[in-house]
Image (cartoon, rainbow, N blue to C red):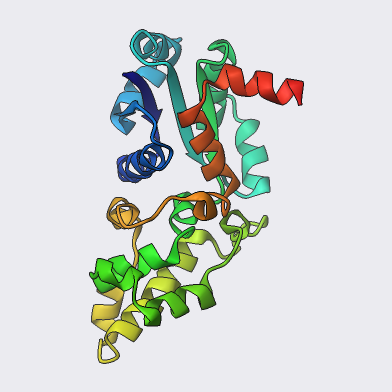
Length: 240
């Protein structure tokens, strides 16, 4: 069975969430693929040495067909600033991607991991109500249809300080909690609302299908890399 390594160096919690989503993508397409994950600590250790990251990638590529790096996509101004910093995370990753000749790729998560979770409001409802059966209940279907936005990669504003996907999901979680339990006090509401520490748990409730994949371009890009060789993807793009 082919294997792919997923490396989300900014957060191990995000890495777990991404791996859950990857497994759902694999199941949706019926792919025979094993997903492994690199750790934040491991990335920091190898990236601190000269050519350490490239050496680590080459070792992984001995038994993985592809290494996929995932980074949060910042606002436009922040991205440009970081690209000007020689030792920034994105520049370290981009250097390795260029040297790998298509065997390592970078996916910028637009906009933040929470934007991937927001592709399926019904799944989020199921998580915060602690009831997976709510995916079939008319009350929650209507709620999801009313609030579900289309393109979740458009949530974050380009300017710094704009409302981001994380804040959007926190607000959504509070709405769900209040509907599920109108008597919930402010203390318990804050305690149970979304936080990035539980992103992997929420990811387990998200459904991946044609519709949810269409709601975020970077999620669809990630899915394409899982189901296809990136070199074949490049050939297809060049031929079209």
